[in-house]
Image (cartoon, rainbow over all chains, first blue to last red; front, side):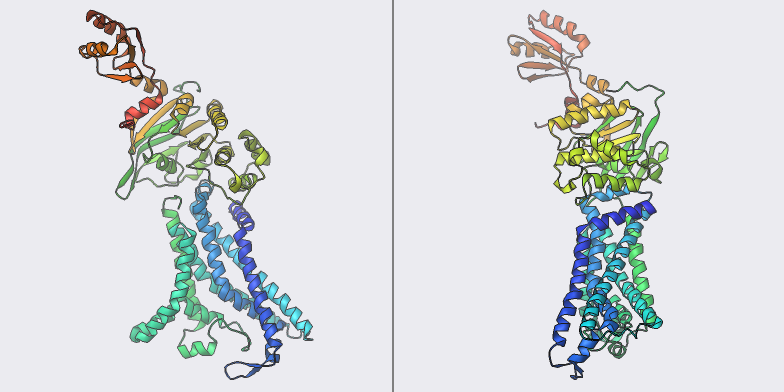
Length: 291
Length: 311
């Protein structure tokens, strides 16, 4: 397995798309921090009841919230970038015709596709980590520039909480990444993976809203959608209320009658496994032809 | 051409009762053939005749509907890996990572294959004449250079069976000549070469045996010399070809007469040339030239596949 992992690592590391996607993610973190820092310099209030001041916003940008805030960006925009990476890594092998080259040089199709998946996951994890590092670095600058250089909050439980947030974020990225990967394998193209997955991400809230309006048993269906359950898990990441949240809060989810986080996690695991099994079965059984 | 095959030559590849169906289309129908060590075996057919599908099945990329492919005794339709380790292939067109250099492409392939010395990469690049441009990205290569890299990749693991699907595609005349020289050399080194090409003149020069397929069905197979003898014709000319034509039509065992560039192509076996000449003389028709009609592989191919019809 080591040679094929090294092979996949080398290809993804040298692929320009990988670096462009990482740059977009890091750029988003820098952009959002810059905009929020700029806003925090204005004398105004924020929130639905004007309950937050500029000082609240500035303090929320300090180091204490740097990890969850960076991860909230990864958990929203990062999903789209992960979808592009996963679908592109598979689909481009078909468009370049290299799938034949790799298949005739690999010990088996399952090893081949599993190595690719493992390396895509590793790069997504590395990308999320890079985003956190950039977020923490920028936040450190803001913190020290505003005289907030106090690290008393860095305790064992704080660090554990940050690690959990990181793992939770990677966990919610998994189903859509798996779907993009699977669709790219089945459709033998990058466009099938990206188009199908982003289409679902776009359509899910609309269909969900319509189903809720329909009432009856239709009302229950959207609760099982990947996005609904993904939001439940992401809401576990503690984020100051003054910071922009790219999804519903725990209170909002409770109002909607969302599933418990345990059930949500289970559903997301099921989605991920089903998508991956589909990809593996399709790749193992089907003829390898290009495009 | 390599030495003619002997009975002691090891069988490298055997295709038995191979069928492949894509929906309603039968791409391969009951294909049976074998390739032995040290020979150049050419697999010919018009576009869409099932050549690439057959190559895909040999490489374990395409699953057959029925039948099996044995490479070195290993069933490629069940577990291709043991066989693939001894096969080098340039299938359809050379496909590599466009953002990697030629050298990096071979390096990554070597990493994947394992057990390939770095010197072998330089050696294969040198062999195909790509050393000077090995550091350039694949996307900057011309079609001919891409094909050269494909051949280098096929030879990277020092294979015992080399499968080359249109290896001269995009090559300039000197590149084509180099490949024409390379193929019999590979066979002389004891490798088997399975060659798919539409350049029948090239095939005729380098092949020991040929198989011709049409609509997925094998329509002819055998040594090149034997296939070329299939069409036995005489080439004849007289001062005036019209009386000659009439006289030939009066000979009952003349199977056909066609005009070609001032000559008549007469369907009569070469060994009956004297007999035919006597029959014509008896009709007071005298030929000024009578020689065996030199048949080439292209003519045989066109005749067998019916591709020449309408040309």
